[in-house]
Length: 99
Image 1: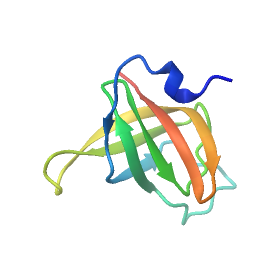
Image 2: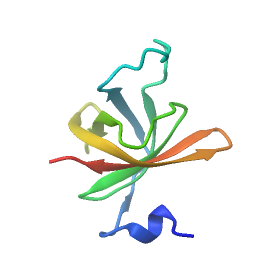
Image 3: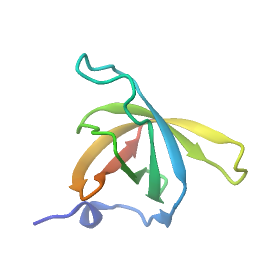
Image 4: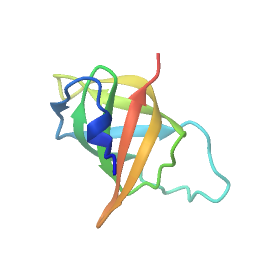
């Protein structure tokens, strides 16, 4: 069985930081208090993965706030959910940055 790591086109860098995101399309059944952050796992020029409690869905577009060197700043990047894996404590999500 293919795993997401086998499909990577470029090497990723470890990113163990809190990453905020905004969902771009509200779902009618989505509670208002859905978490909008996760822990970044890794990042590359093409995408990133993170752990979150938020049930993101394949194909969904999110506005990801990628932290930069300064802890006080982030760069907003639109990203598409490419895959989601359920974990013991939530979800691991693979994101592809959109141009």
